[in-house]
Length: 306
Image (cartoon, rainbow, N blue to C red; front, side, top):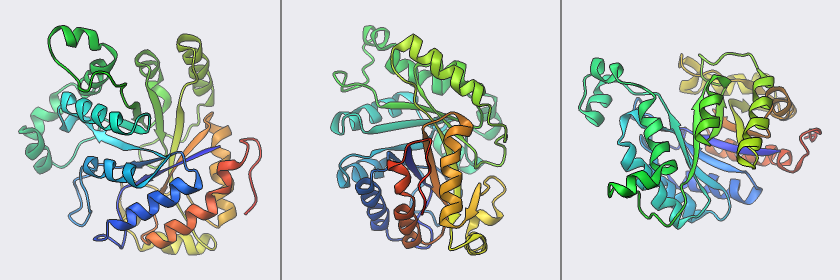
């Protein structure tokens, strides 16, 4: 199976960005599929809000792993600027760049600082239009070239475009736009229903239409401890324990976490899982990387023992 990673913050090592590069390099060496960084504006102690400046540094510190955002809060940005920035990045690190598009937003003060709009004006806008515009800038490029609107460097392909959501309801849009799809289970609003049938139907339709397999994954959050009690105690030490927007999907021993992640591939009809480690200690997160790495070489039908 494929196993990727999601990072929102540095935990206790808030001021040591080198630890993020250590984490990325270990993930690269162990064969993890991708590393995504989140975009958030609600914590003054976070090292980053918009992770874009970190992406080329991580790509330069690694050799194989795909790097990107999950997700870029596209409603807070110019779609043209985002498309141009990520194509330029993909021209330097060809086929290793992901652009995850998310429809979320931030607190009013950040919304106003980024867009110049008050919250009422911002919320009244079409929330899907910026995502559609980014996709169109790549998919419908000839019509923009006729208007002399260039997403440079035009000789290079687009990054991998990912749509992020809570359920499989958006799969028809993903099929039409030729994007990849990541479904999160760790947001508190995410419905628990697997809906594997929708995922399998999407896969068949995508391959029939485009002649290549669809990319579909599940993003989950948790902590691996010595046992379930240890993992729960580790969660209590983090801000996630009291954050109403996030939930831990799995808190357990190495075997419990491994079994859970492996089971997701069959339950949800995916071949890749994205792991958001909620532990506050980066050193512990890196030990978890080692513990989970046997999953990467394991067939989907057979979970490794730890």
